[in-house]
Amino acid sequence: MSIGLLILIVVFVGLLLLDTPIAFVVGAATVLAALAIGSPNSASVVASDMANSVSSFALLAIPFFILAGELMGAGGLARRLIRFAAALIGKLPGGLAIVNTVTCMLFGAISGSAAAAISSIGNTLIPEMNRQGYPKDFNVSVTVSGAITGLLIPPSNVMIVFAVVASVSVADLFLAGVLPGILMGLCVIGVCVVLSARHGYGRGAAIETPPPLGQSFLGAFPSLLLVVIVLGGIFGGWFTATEASAVAVVWAFLLSVIFYREVKLTELWGILGRSARTTAMVLLLVATSSAMSKFLTTEQVPQMVSDALLGMSSNPLVILLTINLALLMVGTFMDMTPAILIFTPILLPVGIDLGMDPIHFGIIMITNLSIGLCTPPVGTCLFIGCGVGKAKIAPVSRQMLPFYAGLFIALILITYIPIISTWLPDLINQ
Image 1 (spheres, rainbow, N blue to C red):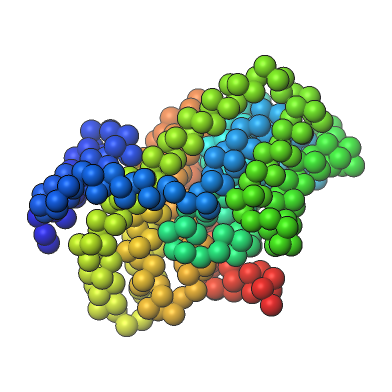
Image 2 (image 1 turned 90 degrees about the horizontal axis):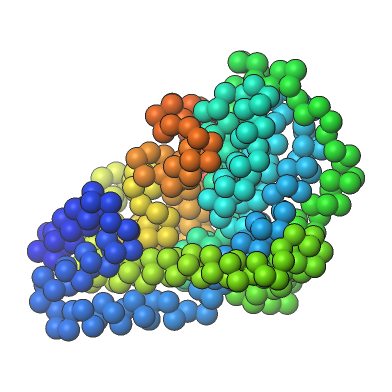
């Protein structure tokens, strides 16, 4: 191991333990490692790598999708999706848990943010589930598990990041995530049904007066249409993924300000400000993580990891299981964006050597890191869910165990049955 790589690891771990923001952890570790190996103009080289990494047309989609998500979140989308889901399944025993999961899936997919789904849906449904006798820790677990499934259902910002790093089609990756995202959601719903039946959650406390299905569908349909417009436009050849993100902003503005009339023009400044802050955080992560990824490539870390994994076993099933376990571990302490940027160049060559489709590998990677968002010690979504539900981390983590099992089953199916991810892209591209 070179001195530069050793310093990078030590600085990275040390700053992470000091609770330093991850973007500064990655940036500082990269600069110090580059200085240690005596690179001429190390700081300016890292700065140049950072600037070049965000000079991408595909990445322009990220701020637009973030803004669209903010507009939809402020425009009453969550309430309408809850009414629609309640009309479909609200009368079932334990139905409110299923309503929670389905609504989080829909909102997470439309907004592109699991954190937004937890905040918007959780603030409404967790108190209602508490009132109807569902255990609080269970309610938080349902919300957190359901929200991360939306990261696989397009449009998804993390898919755009992976597509840029792996040089694959954003449209194909969007298509590939649909069935895996639905599969994850069904696994979460299965856990909800089993636990509710076993413990009697929600028995006799189903939603008393579910709204009429037709009325609730009409209320939610314009919001659901956003996904249809974005995906239909991309796959119909009307616009690129980046242009689709701008269309999404226009549609979200029309719904929130004109059609639903829940966002006043005076509130747009605050929405733009929140979107700008989120965009700045995401793109700073992209910039610093890309610089670290380039340094790791220079130090031949991808080749070393590939040789180690391929030398450990000749069985592709064992290698894939090892990669999954490694990514699950990474997801427990690192946010998705830097994890994708740093580890894609390291692990993707291994997947390609195994004969995997890069699109399939991307879905596996995003699934792993999504699960990491609700896994302690650093699971962002777990912390947000506990904050929204006013619950403690330890008991919620215990309640999450059956949900982890359900999500892991989905992960194994996605990993070892490639057609789940590749069928839709292959069908559309025929």
